[in-house]
Length: 448
Ligand code: PFF
Image (cartoon, protein in one colour):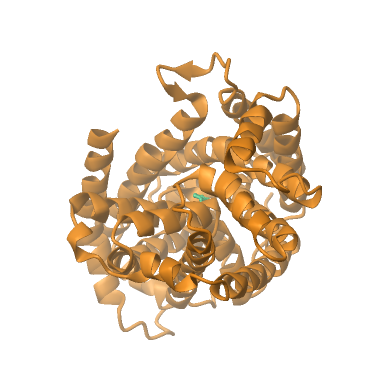
């Protein structure tokens, strides 16, 4: 029997946890480069419009399913639409959690290796070629990447073992403020360097000539991944949100926090890079090669490099716990597992796939299909296929299968809250979101 179900003890706890899920590796090294390459301020403007107009309504749709259904993604949908096949949406979410966790835990493990490298002053006086060489050697090392991946998943499991209030909520309430403090320290440092204004111009100067369909869709894809939309994470967390909390303001806070972190990351990276005349490259190379080299050149860089990788590790950890929680809540509620057993099971299965992701990055790896590593496959399969399909099914379910009254009832806490925008939000979920998601999806299929 399910006695009293665990849950977040406060609205702030719920926001910290959901923002923790949203704020992740994607914000820190993906967003700034996308913005810089796609017209700076113009991209930013479009991104902010997208997260406000689409991100908030879809997040509310996910919280609605979770809180009204009161269970894991599969169980919640079963509760809302009994005896139907809609619970397939829930299974897509569980699958996505395993897939994202597999490649995400690989990169998360790297953050620990790089904290270690930063502390032992490994980067001192190395040029970019030497640092890149070190990164390759690390991938080829038969032991270290796996060790860090296992340790990282161990840390994730440690928090999940403890439950929602005493685990997820307690730790995200400490980790998220710590993350903001580190971000602010790094921003101040970056902004006070010579040449900072060049970097800011790159990030913020609007270049509307770059606005086109592809850029628009890049912003959409980034918004979905960054806000953790389209899989079970926010449905699961929604099921733990108190019936008294306001889902609209919770969603707004999460979206604002996530976007602020992305912008602050840009404010750290570009001014620092431009001060040394470096055009930052995109992706993992930026975080694990370029930035350590830049830190090495700056005054106090030893300290700033350490806290930067701690920042990355924290951002990753609050995201991996949300992914593991999806799996654990599902296994306990749908398969009657004990929380401890489910945590072990979820951790070991995702590590199993995760290890193959890590193995696939070795130079001599056999887990490479054509020119796509298993790691890339899991990344693309989730971000480009599973998440958009999940999000599409979620909005269709909420707007077309469920009744408008049910949605209004839940987000107004049974008519005790006044949510002036509820009609607008429902309109977006019903008529705008499905078409936009289909557009992103088709574009991603065509482009790769
Ligand atoms: N939002 C995370 C990021 O930006 O890195 C990634 C993520 C975490 C996606 C959790 C989905 C999820 F459920």
